[in-house]
Image 1 (cartoon, one colour):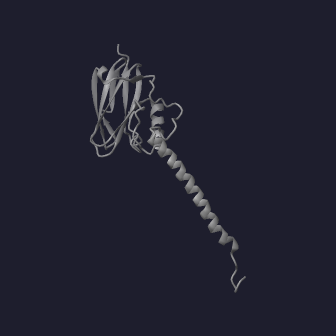
Image 2 (cartoon, rainbow, N blue to C red):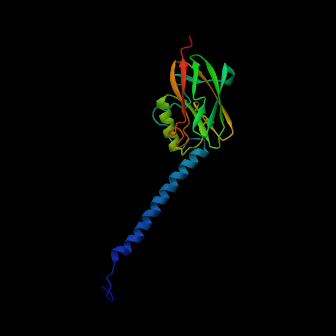
Image 3 (cartoon, helix red, strand yellow):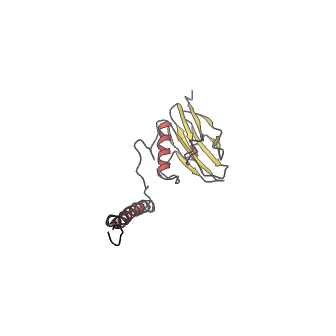
Length: 186
C-alpha cells in the first residue's frame, strides 16, 4: 500500500499489452486487405474458387454460346419485389437462347443459371465477395444494375430442370428464383 491505497501493478501492465495486441491484429488485417485489393487490381479474383465451381467451363445441361447462334430471345424482368417475370421458362435441348434480363427496379439484381449445387456455390461466392459484380469468367451469371438490361446466350444440351436465381444479399432467400425446364426437344 502507498498512502493507504493498494498498488495495482497488474492493471498498469494490462492496458499496454492490450494496445500492443490490438496494433498487431490491425496490422495483420490491413496487410490481408491490401493483398485482396492488389489481386483485384491485377485482374485476379480476391477469392479462390470453391470446390465444384465451374467458371468458364461447360455445364452438364449446357454451355455459353454466341448471340448470333440464338434461335430466340427470352425477355425476363428482375423486380424489387424479389421476382423474375416470367419466373418459369421452358427451352428445348439443342436450342440456343438469348436471355435479355431487364432490371425494372431500384436495387441491383443478378441472374444466375444453374442446378441446385451451382446456385448454392454461387450464393456462397457472392457472400464471400460481399455482393461484388460478376467477373467475365462467370458465363452463367449476370449482374444487372437498376434500369439496365443484360444479355446471356446459352445452348441447352441435356433435358432436365435447372434454376434461375438472384444472389444479391438476401434476394434468393426472399424467393427471387425460378425454374428453367429443358425439354427433350423431340
